[in-house]
Image 1 (tube, one colour):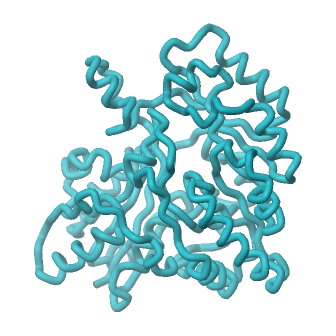
Image 2 (image 1 turned 90 degrees about the vertical axis):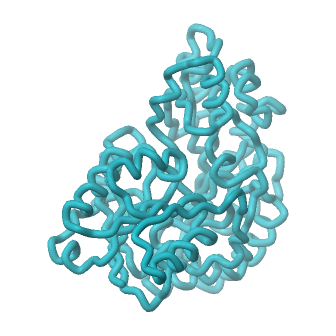
Image 3 (image 1 turned 180 degrees about the horizontal axis):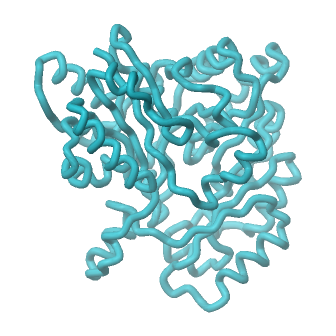
Length: 383
């Protein structure tokens, strides 16, 4: 079985960092970690080729070689995903699709001809897919039925399939899930509210593999909340530090975390010692009424500005995400965000309009009210 792993284009936006990438002479910020993990879970007797369309086009030879095309995408990649499914079908290829977009809106994927839907988390559904392929089934939908996999059994991703020089940063994942319940967030829909983590040795094995392959630059821990399970992340950092010392600090790290990181000096110090340089915070807004409405209570317990100061003093550079468009938002919300960014000297601030993503609490609230805007999701995250 020759499998072409295909990653669709991202549309141009502030989040795509194309100007920064041009300065760095790179093609994309991060590689498709999901697809190289899929390749590691599938039978290793199969052949794999990966094409990230954000890096280059699929060659005619690659199309001809493939027996099966597997795609994964976020909602923001919808347009090119659907186009690539149709192109693969035009060429007579069997097509399997997974990832956040297909999991959230499977009917949109099947409408353009996908043969197999590998939904939810692949550790559970990929073996079901392989069984169907081996039994000669021409189509199928594979779901986890609410079960969440034990990620401590996830194999080392097939990093060897990536074109390293194309990427500004590498991706690894320590945990899935988040303990909070933000109304607009689809992470808890996709991965649950009980953070599941890999073992320290498991992630060190991934770093060993990247080191063996020659990577010597920044690595982004793509966890949606790296500190969701503080006990386990501290155990990991305790093991990571001697690894970094032994290898003479070959990597720098960045990640995403909730603002309660600021309340744990031990954790921040451990991250800095392990060469974490930056952390992305979902601050969303300095307006406490909006935070309360959207159930982001963890951002209301302490001063947000004090949290940013504490994290910065510890040696971590803060990147922050903000959202405009909460219900009941008072005039001047954007100005207040700008003032907050200037006051706290946040060097990287990203702004988005509120989106009602499929199956989130916000989606269901708007659906109950009959709001047609829920039919227009435009973005989500992949992990």
